Amino acid sequence: TAGLIMPVSGIPSPSRSIWQSRYDHDFETCKPYYYSVRLEDPGAELEFTVSERASFFRVSWERTDQKNIMIGLTNPGELNIIDNNNIEGFELYKNNVRVYFHITADNSFRAGIPENAKTPPAYPEYYLTFDVPENKKIGLKVGVSFIDRAQARKNLESEIPGWDFNSVKEKARDRWNE
Image 1 (tube, one colour):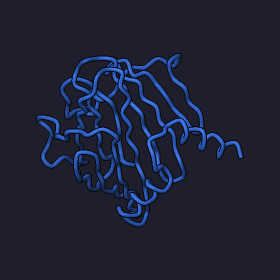
Image 2 (image 1 turned 90 degrees about the vertical axis):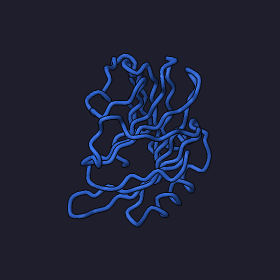
Image 3 (image 1 turned 135 degrees about the horizontal axis):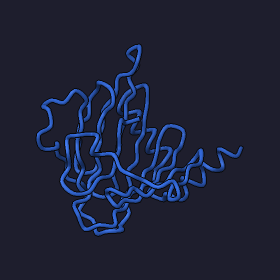
């Protein structure tokens, strides 16, 4: 759990309500091991699948506008940009439980803070801008741990070592059906 992960297009806004999007349930698939939806406002397709301690997101945009993924914590914590492909941090939950995370992207991104955002915001947030053509899928993987950031990265690397989304989805389906 790395807070909010939401595809948007155009100029990023500090208002999380603008991150929201309309969607039609006719263009939504929801299974215990897989979710996909067409987000109308950014013109994006979002899908994700899971392993035990990691998740794999895949996003594509049909527009030529700037393509962003908003990352924002929903609890106190830290959100640190490591380089143009990696983010790490933690969120602090009830009873001082820390959930550490490591996020990695298959395409380089430029990270920024939305213009007019509170500095520092109550809950840290960044936008990640991807310079990709319309309809190109980008991957984002998230590993989590209750131990530390390094363990979150190890969990991600051991459970989802590559970028084969369909393989991860099939393993999750098989695990669910056991």
